[in-house]
Image (cartoon, rainbow, N blue to C red; front, side, top):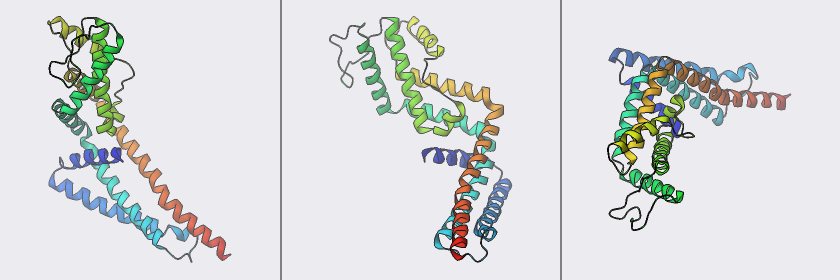
Length: 255
């Protein structure tokens, strides 16, 4: 469900970038298309049983088919600006996560625990997460990498949870620690810093998303529309299939 909501948000953001004329043409076109598919769904039973009497379920399936068709056109047209909307969403996600105290605290606590479990740093007299003065000792490269990896993975999990469709088309993965983390940590600690922040993980994931979007820009819209069309066809098979089955079943009973 969250993926569907994500798709609709992206599509609606894309529609807002249309000119007034194109916007109204899109809405009118969507209404015409939804009416055509709805009527096709409603009278589809005649192919199987001309004497079949429609039921409340039949009418509900017809309405469902019409609504789905309307949303399909809205999303198909809205995806015209998918690249621009996706970049805007990446920037908004990055800024919102930077100011999300709950996320920062949870990420820090997990990194604290992961580094502590390595058993290579001295945690004596270091307050637990949530207490004043709490920090993660990262004097060794292994602990530095573990902290950076944890922050990166937590940021990726957040993207997958909050932007499922965006993550799906850009394929951000957390299985392997990217080289960007190692390079960022080397640069960060070479400046005399003694700790690594969750903000660093957010920035790395945001940059990876932007790079992925830039590299895939020519095919992002095309692939997304192909997925949309295939999904539309598959879901439309539900109302058309159920109506056909009901009409055919009724025909067998009559015979």
